[in-house]
Length: 217
Image (tube, rainbow, N blue to C red; front, side):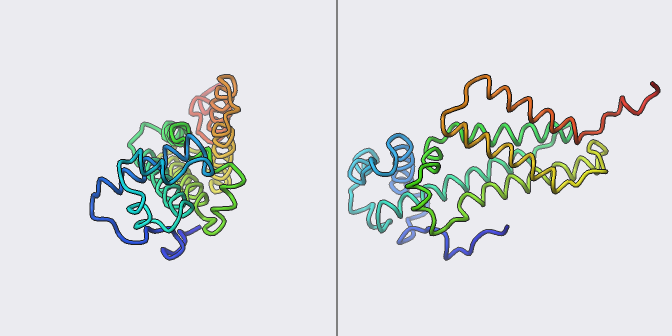
């Protein structure tokens, strides 16, 4: 799935000065407040106070608290995509190693950004309905990078050639996303995290070429 047109993506009302520390402070503070208190309890007044800016300055850039929330979420999803793509581009000794890095980086990013937890709330889903591709962008990036790692593995002789790589990329992505949602919801304990590692290893075992099996019995 391609990115939605730029007109559908949330943008500030007016472009901030390049590298504006005040604009950056607003976004970072808003992310922290939304992550800690949720959309409803986080107030524009408190965000302004914590960011060290005036409330009118926030409304210069954003039409409403909802608009600010949309821009913050869009920014975080972009960073998630960047993290996944960076891991996928790293030189690794094998396709399996690359896939492990991609999956772990994706989950660690989710674990480190509290605002993503708010995306699971019904109120957030309703507010973000106006540009529903916001989460799809992250998921599509994950699937694309996983598929590229599998394709490199085929070219390098590390991944089996008798599999539908597109389907396998979809399965690995689905497992990662579902466990990511459980992680964000706070209902994963250490044992379940280990279960995720075991599931990923099982999936990788099924797609990786096992050279020792080709030798004499």
